[in-house]
Image (cartoon, rainbow, N blue to C red):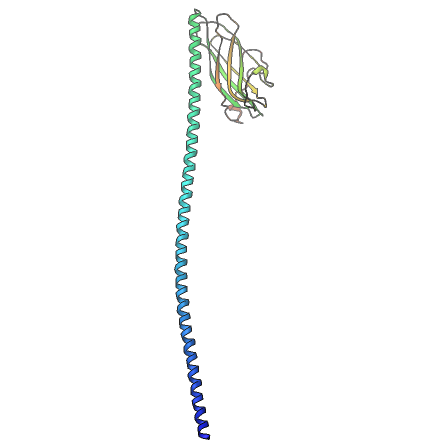
Length: 254
């Protein structure tokens, strides 16, 4: 009976060893399978990350290309607007010159039709900022076009035209503007006369043009006028660059 007990104990130990080895095999197999699965997942994840990085780079490049195209379109649109603005300004200038030539032809036709007399021309017009709020200086020369005409007598006045803040058209003579120096010029010369002065704009006026009007006080002199666009030169603080006013009180030659 003792020998059978020993035999049973030996067989029981072998069974436990076999079970232990079986579990170890199962655990080992599970570990190997888990490692292979983890490696496979990690490899797939790495591939996906590389693909995402490539997609991200492609999107960045596409975004940069789109931004460059937008900037190019905006620049082209800006150039088109500037070209249109310049063309419009040149057209207005040409129309203004055409209008002035037409007026000169009309004056000459009147001179011929009325059988002689004198006619003057306004030239060398300048307009600039004075450095004072809404004040502008100006100068021009009036020349007699008819040789040996004699004394040219009359008055020279200025007239502003523009828009109000409500976009209504408005005209103001210089003698209607507070601060005009002088309000009216007196004209008296044989060949030419230089005029200069200053005007101060009212708050509600946005000027577009400035017209120099010649009003003769002798019968054989034809009245005339010339209109200039409102294009003042910026203020230059150097005193030598700004002509002095020649007629501050409105009396005497300009």
